Length: 80
Image 1 (tube, rainbow, N blue to C red):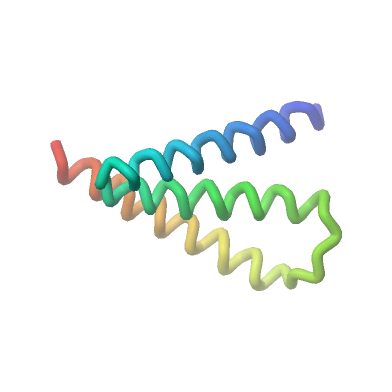
Image 2 (cartoon, rainbow, N blue to C red):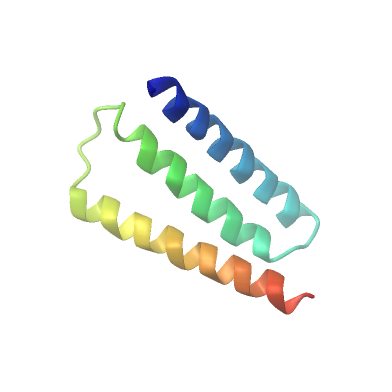
């Protein structure tokens, strides 16, 4: 099942890259997508790369990612 985790990380990187594309097309919600999935990628990679990161910092980053996703979805819904 570890292959699914690596595949998820790959998808997170793809989605973050798509966020950059949205930013370049002047879509503000692209920032929310980039930040959210950039943090998700870092969060998931922290399990494999031995970095001296406290669990509290990871929780804070995950919270920022959640707020960023909320903001992006809110911006998308306001554009309709």
